[in-house]
Image 1 (tube, rainbow, N blue to C red):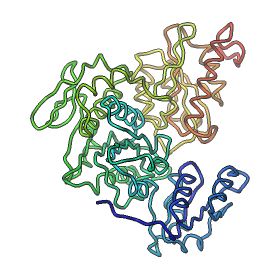
Image 2 (tube, rainbow, N blue to C red):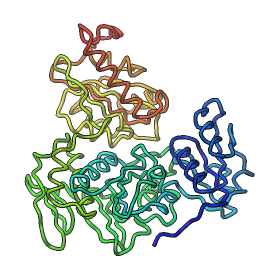
Image 3 (tube, one colour):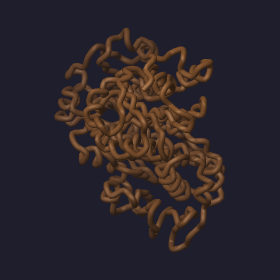
Image 4 (cartoon, rainbow, N blue to C red):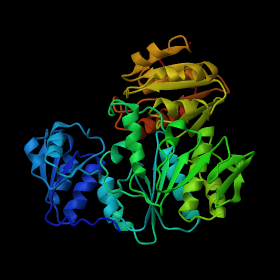
Length: 467
Protein backbone atom coordinates (compact mmCIF):
# COMPACT_ATOMS: atom_id res chain seq x y z
CA UNK A 1 0.00 0.00 0.00
CA UNK A 2 1.21 3.48 -0.84
CA UNK A 3 1.27 5.99 2.02
CA UNK A 4 -1.79 8.16 1.57
CA UNK A 5 -1.87 11.95 1.64
CA UNK A 6 -4.89 14.22 1.68
CA UNK A 7 -3.96 17.66 0.35
CA UNK A 8 -7.24 19.25 1.43
CA UNK A 9 -6.49 22.27 3.59
CA UNK A 10 -2.73 21.64 3.57
CA UNK A 11 -0.36 24.59 3.17
CA UNK A 12 1.80 23.60 0.21
CA UNK A 13 4.70 25.62 -1.13
CA UNK A 14 5.92 25.01 -4.68
CA UNK A 15 9.39 26.44 -5.35
CA UNK A 16 10.23 27.37 -8.93
CA UNK A 17 7.83 28.09 -11.76
CA UNK A 18 9.23 26.15 -14.67
CA UNK A 19 7.18 23.38 -16.29
CA UNK A 20 7.19 21.02 -13.28
CA UNK A 21 6.49 23.74 -10.73
CA UNK A 22 3.48 25.03 -12.63
CA UNK A 23 2.02 21.54 -13.03
CA UNK A 24 2.59 20.77 -9.34
CA UNK A 25 0.99 23.97 -8.11
CA UNK A 26 -2.09 23.46 -10.28
CA UNK A 27 -2.40 19.82 -9.15
CA UNK A 28 -2.20 20.71 -5.47
CA UNK A 29 -4.69 23.57 -5.85
CA UNK A 30 -7.11 21.25 -7.65
CA UNK A 31 -6.84 18.82 -4.72
CA UNK A 32 -7.83 21.41 -2.12
CA UNK A 33 -4.45 22.62 -0.91
CA UNK A 34 -3.66 26.24 0.00
CA UNK A 35 -0.86 26.73 -2.52
CA UNK A 36 1.91 29.30 -2.46
CA UNK A 37 4.40 29.45 -5.32
CA UNK A 38 7.80 31.07 -4.79
CA UNK A 39 9.95 32.11 -7.75
CA UNK A 40 13.23 34.00 -8.02
CA UNK A 41 12.33 35.61 -11.32
CA UNK A 42 10.17 38.75 -11.45
CA UNK A 43 6.58 38.62 -12.63
CA UNK A 44 7.44 39.91 -16.08
CA UNK A 45 9.54 36.83 -16.81
CA UNK A 46 6.87 34.33 -15.74
CA UNK A 47 3.73 36.16 -16.80
CA UNK A 48 2.05 33.15 -18.40
CA UNK A 49 2.55 31.01 -15.30
CA UNK A 50 1.36 33.82 -13.03
CA UNK A 51 -1.90 34.15 -14.93
CA UNK A 52 -2.64 30.40 -14.66
CA UNK A 53 -1.75 30.16 -10.99
CA UNK A 54 -3.66 33.23 -9.90
CA UNK A 55 -6.71 31.89 -11.72
CA UNK A 56 -6.32 28.69 -9.71
CA UNK A 57 -6.22 30.62 -6.42
CA UNK A 58 -2.49 30.29 -5.71
CA UNK A 59 -0.60 32.88 -3.67
CA UNK A 60 2.55 34.06 -5.44
CA UNK A 61 5.92 35.18 -4.09
CA UNK A 62 7.87 36.59 -7.02
CA UNK A 63 11.29 38.12 -7.45
CA UNK A 64 12.94 36.11 -4.66
CA UNK A 65 12.38 33.71 -1.77
CA UNK A 66 11.77 34.60 1.88
CA UNK A 67 12.48 32.27 4.78
CA UNK A 68 9.18 33.08 6.47
CA UNK A 69 7.22 31.81 3.49
CA UNK A 70 9.07 28.50 3.66
CA UNK A 71 8.73 27.83 7.37
CA UNK A 72 4.97 28.46 7.40
CA UNK A 73 4.18 25.41 5.23
CA UNK A 74 2.98 21.86 5.81
CA UNK A 75 4.75 20.56 2.69
CA UNK A 76 7.33 21.98 0.26
CA UNK A 77 7.77 20.75 -3.31
CA UNK A 78 10.90 22.24 -4.94
CA UNK A 79 11.16 22.02 -8.72
CA UNK A 80 14.03 19.86 -10.04
CA UNK A 81 16.09 22.91 -10.96
CA UNK A 82 16.04 24.31 -7.43
CA UNK A 83 19.25 23.46 -5.50
CA UNK A 84 18.75 21.71 -2.19
CA UNK A 85 21.17 24.05 -0.39
CA UNK A 86 18.91 27.06 -1.00
CA UNK A 87 18.97 28.90 2.37
CA UNK A 88 15.17 28.98 2.89
CA UNK A 89 15.04 25.23 2.16
CA UNK A 90 17.73 24.65 4.76
CA UNK A 91 15.68 26.67 7.25
CA UNK A 92 12.56 24.62 6.49
CA UNK A 93 14.53 21.40 6.85
CA UNK A 94 15.72 22.53 10.27
CA UNK A 95 12.05 22.97 11.23
CA UNK A 96 11.39 19.38 10.02
CA UNK A 97 8.96 20.53 7.34
CA UNK A 98 8.59 17.75 4.73
CA UNK A 99 10.38 18.53 1.46
CA UNK A 100 9.37 16.20 -1.38
CA UNK A 101 10.15 16.05 -5.05
CA UNK A 102 7.27 16.26 -7.48
CA UNK A 103 7.66 12.57 -8.40
CA UNK A 104 7.24 11.59 -4.73
CA UNK A 105 3.93 13.46 -4.56
CA UNK A 106 2.77 12.21 -7.96
CA UNK A 107 3.58 8.57 -7.17
CA UNK A 108 1.30 8.66 -4.13
CA UNK A 109 -1.65 9.46 -6.39
CA UNK A 110 -0.57 7.30 -9.34
CA UNK A 111 -2.53 4.12 -10.07
CA UNK A 112 -1.15 1.02 -11.75
CA UNK A 113 2.50 0.05 -11.90
CA UNK A 114 5.60 2.18 -12.48
CA UNK A 115 8.80 1.53 -14.39
CA UNK A 116 11.38 4.17 -13.38
CA UNK A 117 14.50 4.69 -15.49
CA UNK A 118 17.55 6.70 -14.50
CA UNK A 119 21.26 6.93 -15.34
CA UNK A 120 23.72 9.46 -16.67
CA UNK A 121 22.99 8.72 -20.33
CA UNK A 122 20.38 6.93 -22.41
CA UNK A 123 17.41 7.66 -20.14
CA UNK A 124 15.15 9.18 -22.75
CA UNK A 125 15.85 6.61 -25.45
CA UNK A 126 15.39 3.72 -23.01
CA UNK A 127 12.22 5.26 -21.54
CA UNK A 128 10.71 5.82 -24.99
CA UNK A 129 11.69 2.36 -26.23
CA UNK A 130 10.37 0.61 -23.12
CA UNK A 131 7.04 2.36 -23.57
CA UNK A 132 7.00 1.48 -27.27
CA UNK A 133 7.58 -2.20 -26.50
CA UNK A 134 4.79 -2.21 -23.91
CA UNK A 135 2.47 -0.55 -26.41
CA UNK A 136 3.41 -3.26 -28.92
CA UNK A 137 2.26 -5.76 -26.27
CA UNK A 138 -1.12 -4.04 -26.03
CA UNK A 139 -0.48 -2.72 -22.52
CA UNK A 140 -1.86 0.77 -21.67
CA UNK A 141 1.17 3.03 -21.17
CA UNK A 142 1.83 6.50 -19.80
CA UNK A 143 5.20 8.16 -20.46
CA UNK A 144 6.23 11.00 -18.16
CA UNK A 145 8.88 12.51 -15.92
CA UNK A 146 12.19 14.05 -16.93
CA UNK A 147 11.38 13.15 -20.53
CA UNK A 148 9.37 16.36 -20.90
CA UNK A 149 5.96 15.91 -19.28
CA UNK A 150 5.81 16.17 -15.47
CA UNK A 151 4.56 12.95 -13.91
CA UNK A 152 2.08 14.86 -11.79
CA UNK A 153 0.28 16.14 -14.87
CA UNK A 154 -0.42 12.57 -16.06
CA UNK A 155 -1.66 11.09 -12.78
CA UNK A 156 -5.30 11.58 -13.73
CA UNK A 157 -4.85 9.33 -16.78
CA UNK A 158 -3.59 6.38 -14.74
CA UNK A 159 -5.68 3.33 -13.87
CA UNK A 160 -5.12 -0.04 -12.26
CA UNK A 161 -4.22 -1.45 -15.69
CA UNK A 162 -1.72 1.21 -16.82
CA UNK A 163 2.05 1.06 -16.63
CA UNK A 164 3.72 4.43 -16.23
CA UNK A 165 7.23 4.55 -17.68
CA UNK A 166 9.01 7.42 -15.97
CA UNK A 167 12.37 8.97 -16.70
CA UNK A 168 13.85 10.24 -13.43
CA UNK A 169 16.86 12.46 -12.80
CA UNK A 170 19.20 12.85 -9.84
CA UNK A 171 17.51 16.18 -9.08
CA UNK A 172 14.13 14.45 -8.79
CA UNK A 173 15.49 11.60 -6.68
CA UNK A 174 17.18 13.86 -4.11
CA UNK A 175 13.89 14.52 -2.31
CA UNK A 176 12.01 11.25 -2.47
CA UNK A 177 10.79 9.62 0.74
CA UNK A 178 8.68 6.55 -0.01
CA UNK A 179 8.80 6.36 -3.81
CA UNK A 180 8.87 2.70 -4.81
CA UNK A 181 8.92 1.76 -8.51
CA UNK A 182 7.83 -1.75 -9.43
CA UNK A 183 10.73 -1.87 -11.88
CA UNK A 184 13.74 0.40 -11.39
CA UNK A 185 16.43 0.70 -14.07
CA UNK A 186 19.90 2.19 -13.53
CA UNK A 187 21.56 2.47 -16.94
CA UNK A 188 25.02 3.81 -16.09
CA UNK A 189 26.86 6.30 -13.90
CA UNK A 190 29.39 8.82 -15.21
CA UNK A 191 30.26 12.27 -13.83
CA UNK A 192 27.50 14.79 -14.52
CA UNK A 193 25.83 17.77 -12.86
CA UNK A 194 28.90 18.39 -10.72
CA UNK A 195 27.95 22.06 -10.74
CA UNK A 196 24.98 21.00 -8.60
CA UNK A 197 26.16 17.91 -6.71
CA UNK A 198 29.17 18.25 -4.43
CA UNK A 199 30.86 15.14 -5.85
CA UNK A 200 30.41 12.22 -8.22
CA UNK A 201 29.69 10.05 -5.18
CA UNK A 202 26.88 12.34 -4.04
CA UNK A 203 25.44 12.38 -7.56
CA UNK A 204 25.63 8.56 -7.75
CA UNK A 205 23.95 8.11 -4.37
CA UNK A 206 21.10 10.35 -5.50
CA UNK A 207 20.56 8.14 -8.55
CA UNK A 208 20.68 4.96 -6.48
CA UNK A 209 17.94 6.24 -4.16
CA UNK A 210 15.51 4.88 -6.75
CA UNK A 211 16.03 1.40 -5.24
CA UNK A 212 15.92 2.27 -1.54
CA UNK A 213 12.23 1.53 -0.91
CA UNK A 214 11.90 -1.50 -3.18
CA UNK A 215 10.96 -4.86 -1.68
CA UNK A 216 11.36 -8.50 -2.65
CA UNK A 217 8.34 -8.15 -4.93
CA UNK A 218 10.04 -5.50 -7.07
CA UNK A 219 12.72 -5.60 -9.78
CA UNK A 220 16.01 -3.72 -10.09
CA UNK A 221 17.72 -3.67 -13.48
CA UNK A 222 21.38 -2.65 -13.70
CA UNK A 223 24.21 -2.48 -16.24
CA UNK A 224 26.65 -5.33 -15.62
CA UNK A 225 29.22 -3.58 -17.85
CA UNK A 226 29.26 -0.39 -15.77
CA UNK A 227 31.37 -0.76 -12.62
CA UNK A 228 30.02 2.45 -11.10
CA UNK A 229 26.39 1.40 -11.51
CA UNK A 230 27.00 -2.21 -10.47
CA UNK A 231 28.19 -1.25 -7.02
CA UNK A 232 24.76 0.20 -6.24
CA UNK A 233 22.93 -3.09 -6.75
CA UNK A 234 20.34 -3.21 -3.92
CA UNK A 235 19.81 -6.14 -1.57
CA UNK A 236 16.03 -6.45 -1.39
CA UNK A 237 14.49 -6.40 -4.90
CA UNK A 238 15.01 -9.12 -7.49
CA UNK A 239 18.05 -8.11 -9.56
CA UNK A 240 18.27 -8.43 -13.34
CA UNK A 241 21.32 -7.39 -15.32
CA UNK A 242 21.91 -6.33 -18.89
CA UNK A 243 25.24 -6.66 -20.69
CA UNK A 244 26.65 -6.13 -24.15
CA UNK A 245 29.90 -7.95 -23.35
CA UNK A 246 29.13 -10.98 -21.15
CA UNK A 247 26.47 -13.49 -20.19
CA UNK A 248 24.37 -12.76 -17.10
CA UNK A 249 22.57 -15.17 -14.80
CA UNK A 250 19.31 -13.20 -14.96
CA UNK A 251 18.56 -10.50 -17.50
CA UNK A 252 19.34 -9.52 -21.10
CA UNK A 253 22.63 -9.94 -22.94
CA UNK A 254 24.26 -10.42 -26.33
CA UNK A 255 25.49 -13.83 -27.40
CA UNK A 256 27.09 -13.48 -30.78
CA UNK A 257 24.48 -11.77 -32.91
CA UNK A 258 21.55 -12.74 -30.68
CA UNK A 259 19.82 -10.75 -27.93
CA UNK A 260 19.01 -13.24 -25.16
CA UNK A 261 16.80 -12.90 -22.10
CA UNK A 262 17.42 -15.30 -19.21
CA UNK A 263 14.93 -15.76 -16.38
CA UNK A 264 14.68 -18.59 -13.85
CA UNK A 265 17.27 -20.55 -15.83
CA UNK A 266 15.32 -20.36 -19.10
CA UNK A 267 16.75 -18.52 -22.12
CA UNK A 268 14.71 -16.83 -24.84
CA UNK A 269 16.13 -15.43 -28.08
CA UNK A 270 14.47 -12.04 -28.52
CA UNK A 271 15.96 -10.73 -31.76
CA UNK A 272 19.21 -10.31 -33.68
CA UNK A 273 21.51 -7.35 -33.32
CA UNK A 274 21.00 -6.49 -36.97
CA UNK A 275 17.34 -5.76 -36.21
CA UNK A 276 18.36 -2.84 -33.96
CA UNK A 277 18.04 0.28 -36.08
CA UNK A 278 19.71 2.69 -33.64
CA UNK A 279 23.36 3.67 -34.18
CA UNK A 280 26.11 2.96 -31.67
CA UNK A 281 27.02 0.38 -29.05
CA UNK A 282 25.44 2.55 -26.37
CA UNK A 283 22.08 2.11 -28.07
CA UNK A 284 22.54 -1.66 -27.99
CA UNK A 285 22.83 -1.27 -24.22
CA UNK A 286 19.67 0.85 -24.21
CA UNK A 287 17.84 -1.87 -26.14
CA UNK A 288 18.99 -4.54 -23.68
CA UNK A 289 17.83 -2.44 -20.73
CA UNK A 290 14.48 -1.62 -22.34
CA UNK A 291 13.86 -5.25 -23.28
CA UNK A 292 14.61 -6.37 -19.75
CA UNK A 293 12.36 -3.72 -18.17
CA UNK A 294 9.49 -4.35 -20.58
CA UNK A 295 9.59 -8.13 -20.09
CA UNK A 296 9.58 -7.73 -16.30
CA UNK A 297 6.61 -5.37 -16.66
CA UNK A 298 4.64 -7.96 -18.62
CA UNK A 299 5.58 -7.65 -22.31
CA UNK A 300 6.00 -10.79 -24.41
CA UNK A 301 9.21 -11.70 -26.27
CA UNK A 302 7.42 -11.13 -29.60
CA UNK A 303 6.44 -7.62 -28.45
CA UNK A 304 10.11 -6.90 -27.69
CA UNK A 305 11.14 -7.96 -31.19
CA UNK A 306 8.34 -5.96 -32.77
CA UNK A 307 8.93 -2.90 -30.60
CA UNK A 308 12.67 -2.75 -31.20
CA UNK A 309 12.40 -3.27 -34.95
CA UNK A 310 9.76 -0.54 -35.35
CA UNK A 311 11.31 2.03 -32.98
CA UNK A 312 12.34 5.11 -34.94
CA UNK A 313 14.48 6.69 -32.25
CA UNK A 314 14.02 9.88 -30.26
CA UNK A 315 14.36 13.49 -31.30
CA UNK A 316 17.70 15.09 -30.33
CA UNK A 317 19.37 11.70 -29.65
CA UNK A 318 21.72 10.86 -32.54
CA UNK A 319 18.91 12.04 -34.78
CA UNK A 320 19.70 12.00 -38.50
CA UNK A 321 18.78 15.39 -39.93
CA UNK A 322 19.90 15.44 -43.57
CA UNK A 323 22.56 14.51 -46.09
CA UNK A 324 23.79 17.50 -48.06
CA UNK A 325 26.49 17.16 -50.71
CA UNK A 326 27.46 13.77 -49.34
CA UNK A 327 27.81 15.12 -45.77
CA UNK A 328 25.56 13.68 -43.05
CA UNK A 329 24.22 15.92 -40.27
CA UNK A 330 23.26 14.42 -36.89
CA UNK A 331 21.56 16.15 -33.97
CA UNK A 332 22.55 14.83 -30.53
CA UNK A 333 21.67 17.96 -28.58
CA UNK A 334 20.71 15.72 -25.64
CA UNK A 335 24.42 14.89 -25.25
CA UNK A 336 24.71 17.32 -22.35
CA UNK A 337 27.66 15.62 -20.64
CA UNK A 338 31.04 14.31 -21.69
CA UNK A 339 30.15 10.62 -21.58
CA UNK A 340 27.14 11.15 -23.83
CA UNK A 341 29.35 12.97 -26.34
CA UNK A 342 31.90 10.16 -26.17
CA UNK A 343 29.17 7.64 -26.99
CA UNK A 344 27.97 9.80 -29.88
CA UNK A 345 31.48 10.06 -31.33
CA UNK A 346 31.96 6.33 -31.03
CA UNK A 347 28.92 5.79 -33.28
CA UNK A 348 30.96 7.08 -36.24
CA UNK A 349 34.23 5.60 -37.56
CA UNK A 350 35.96 8.78 -38.78
CA UNK A 351 35.50 12.11 -40.53
CA UNK A 352 33.47 13.82 -37.79
CA UNK A 353 33.19 17.58 -37.41
CA UNK A 354 31.75 17.93 -33.93
CA UNK A 355 30.12 20.96 -32.33
CA UNK A 356 30.91 21.26 -28.61
CA UNK A 357 30.09 23.82 -25.95
CA UNK A 358 27.42 25.53 -23.93
CA UNK A 359 27.09 25.91 -20.18
CA UNK A 360 29.76 23.96 -18.31
CA UNK A 361 28.65 21.51 -15.59
CA UNK A 362 32.02 21.01 -13.96
CA UNK A 363 33.08 18.49 -16.61
CA UNK A 364 36.46 17.07 -17.63
CA UNK A 365 36.56 17.40 -21.42
CA UNK A 366 40.01 15.81 -21.62
CA UNK A 367 38.23 12.45 -21.61
CA UNK A 368 37.27 13.18 -25.23
CA UNK A 369 40.85 13.51 -26.49
CA UNK A 370 41.44 9.91 -27.59
CA UNK A 371 38.13 9.56 -29.41
CA UNK A 372 38.55 12.94 -31.09
CA UNK A 373 42.03 12.01 -32.35
CA UNK A 374 40.66 8.78 -33.82
CA UNK A 375 37.39 10.04 -35.26
CA UNK A 376 37.21 13.82 -35.61
CA UNK A 377 38.63 16.20 -38.19
CA UNK A 378 37.54 19.35 -36.41
CA UNK A 379 35.96 20.65 -33.21
CA UNK A 380 33.78 23.76 -33.42
CA UNK A 381 33.24 25.53 -30.12
CA UNK A 382 30.18 27.51 -29.04
CA UNK A 383 28.95 29.06 -25.83
CA UNK A 384 30.32 29.88 -22.41
CA UNK A 385 32.46 26.75 -21.97
CA UNK A 386 34.49 27.28 -25.15
CA UNK A 387 37.68 28.50 -23.45
CA UNK A 388 37.70 25.65 -20.94
CA UNK A 389 37.07 23.04 -23.62
CA UNK A 390 39.85 24.40 -25.83
CA UNK A 391 42.31 24.38 -22.94
CA UNK A 392 41.61 20.68 -22.35
CA UNK A 393 41.50 19.57 -25.99
CA UNK A 394 44.40 21.62 -27.35
CA UNK A 395 46.57 19.61 -29.77
CA UNK A 396 44.11 16.71 -29.91
CA UNK A 397 42.32 17.99 -33.01
CA UNK A 398 41.95 21.32 -34.89
CA UNK A 399 39.70 23.61 -32.83
CA UNK A 400 37.70 26.57 -34.13
CA UNK A 401 35.91 29.13 -31.97
CA UNK A 402 32.58 29.57 -33.78
CA UNK A 403 30.82 31.36 -30.91
CA UNK A 404 27.29 30.60 -32.02
CA UNK A 405 25.57 27.53 -33.38
CA UNK A 406 24.80 29.37 -36.63
CA UNK A 407 28.46 30.00 -37.34
CA UNK A 408 29.44 26.51 -36.21
CA UNK A 409 27.10 24.91 -38.74
CA UNK A 410 28.28 27.28 -41.46
CA UNK A 411 31.98 26.65 -40.82
CA UNK A 412 31.42 22.90 -40.57
CA UNK A 413 29.54 22.85 -43.87
CA UNK A 414 32.38 24.73 -45.59
CA UNK A 415 35.01 22.31 -44.36
CA UNK A 416 33.18 18.99 -44.53
CA UNK A 417 33.94 16.58 -47.37
CA UNK A 418 31.66 13.96 -48.91
CA UNK A 419 31.48 11.05 -46.48
CA UNK A 420 32.00 13.26 -43.41
CA UNK A 421 29.59 13.75 -40.54
CA UNK A 422 28.67 17.05 -38.88
CA UNK A 423 27.62 16.18 -35.34
CA UNK A 424 26.03 18.38 -32.69
CA UNK A 425 26.99 16.65 -29.42
CA UNK A 426 27.79 19.58 -27.11
CA UNK A 427 28.85 17.85 -23.83
CA UNK A 428 27.32 20.87 -22.05
CA UNK A 429 24.01 22.23 -20.88
CA UNK A 430 22.24 24.63 -23.21
CA UNK A 431 21.13 27.38 -20.86
CA UNK A 432 23.78 29.95 -21.83
CA UNK A 433 22.32 30.43 -25.32
CA UNK A 434 19.10 28.40 -25.47
CA UNK A 435 16.00 27.66 -23.40
CA UNK A 436 16.86 23.95 -23.21
CA UNK A 437 18.48 21.17 -25.21
CA UNK A 438 15.31 20.77 -27.31
CA UNK A 439 15.52 24.40 -28.37
CA UNK A 440 19.21 23.96 -29.26
CA UNK A 441 18.44 20.84 -31.29
CA UNK A 442 15.59 22.50 -33.18
CA UNK A 443 17.79 25.47 -34.07
CA UNK A 444 20.48 23.10 -35.34
CA UNK A 445 17.98 21.26 -37.53
CA UNK A 446 16.63 24.52 -38.89
CA UNK A 447 20.14 25.69 -39.79
CA UNK A 448 20.87 22.41 -41.56
CA UNK A 449 17.65 22.62 -43.54
CA UNK A 450 18.56 26.15 -44.58
CA UNK A 451 21.86 24.78 -45.87
CA UNK A 452 19.96 22.30 -47.99
CA UNK A 453 18.09 25.19 -49.61
CA UNK A 454 21.27 27.13 -50.40
CA UNK A 455 22.62 26.68 -53.95
CA UNK A 456 26.17 26.35 -52.66
CA UNK A 457 26.30 24.57 -49.30
CA UNK A 458 26.77 27.14 -46.52
CA UNK A 459 27.19 30.02 -49.02
CA UNK A 460 24.49 32.26 -47.58
CA UNK A 461 25.57 32.19 -43.95
CA UNK A 462 29.26 31.42 -43.83
CA UNK A 463 31.99 33.40 -42.19
CA UNK A 464 34.23 32.64 -45.12
CA UNK A 465 36.39 30.52 -42.86
CA UNK A 466 37.69 27.59 -44.88
CA UNK A 467 40.30 25.60 -42.97
